[in-house]
Image (cartoon, rainbow, N blue to C red; front, side, top):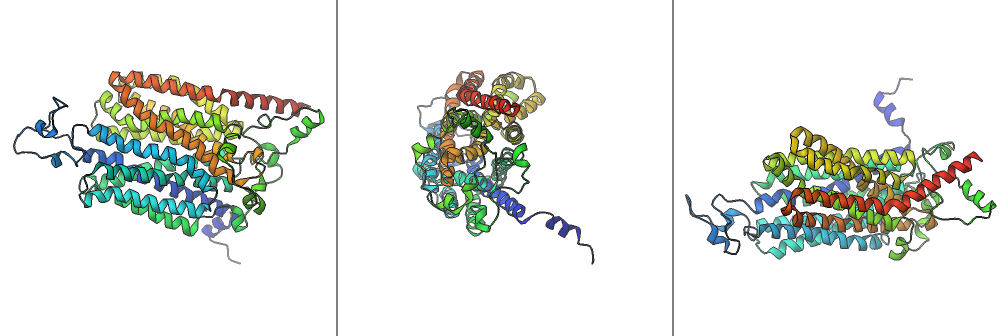
Length: 519
């Protein structure tokens, strides 16, 4: 018999379950990357919506914009200084309104999204959200082709887009959580979470290609891409491994149950506690490292239980603490997202394009930070302690960044990578692995329908911080950039303080587990 070709040997070396998991990993990665792809154009197009005319002088903000235009070589009209209504002297407030309308709608809608999503099939819910997101993203760009100059048209497009985009995160996290067990969930989701940076980069490239010639296409093209990915979602997304007769967790030998590589923990300490007559504490029994509940995979676990309520989700141990922690962590991350290019421009005296290119290093550091956080948390089996360690290092790093970045470009590059890793590491871990862990917490007794609501609560609370961070930075920055960094350090300290109780529980749990093994 002839030897199989190398490519065929490679394909057959993986099991059917592994191929399905790789497919779902890649598909959900691309689906959520397309969401971020459609969010990025607004930051690129802002420079086209308002242009700094050489003839425009801002001497008196109370005067009409037309009165500020001085005839030089030929008269300018308002449209030559930007796109009405963003061509006025209050353009910063108007452009800011576009950002905050999206972020606030996203934050409010996220709380409702999880409750709705867990009552509907994920594939239908996510497909509908992506089609609607494509429509509203393209709608913003259609204002260019139909010569729309009404501010409320653009604000309503942003609000509608912010609401429908809340369908994305709870759905993809629920799906990826169904397919991957807790053994290496932190590492897997750390790699998977890089879809945010990939989507941002692709969105920037697409929007930048059209922005100078026809900025409407900077929105229409991403809108079409998101809608097409919605069709792909409808055709190919598999919500749960049991739908295609796959195992509920990645295949592993029975020995791995004990060594933590792919952990379905046998609750021997619980039996020991009962024998000693000691009351059990749900949080003390392996907080965030409890068993991968295979009941979630059964038909009864998936369809026989009612959807969890909002208050019921809040009662899951750790949800409130991690939600509030993410609020402050996301506040820091989104402040960098919106204000970092301007800070680099002011400090390094670079043009806008070079400052924008340099600011992407913060996202590069964030990719490594998310992967590192997942890897460490898997190895230590301590999600809260991993987040706390990175937050503890982040605060002094931000102070160093504000001081070192003034010493030259090379120092700025290094600090951007380090700061990005430490700031985005906890943010990535909480929104992915922690959300999936809490949504499958053993206190739910096998109710698989809670994951969407838990994810929405955590990310929705974080989105409040995402809206507040850029707003506070805009208010504080006129008094000096150092004050902005002080605000970010305080936010990091608050995030750490909110996790102290969970960190204490994890350390106590580890001590009890070690004591049990010795006996």
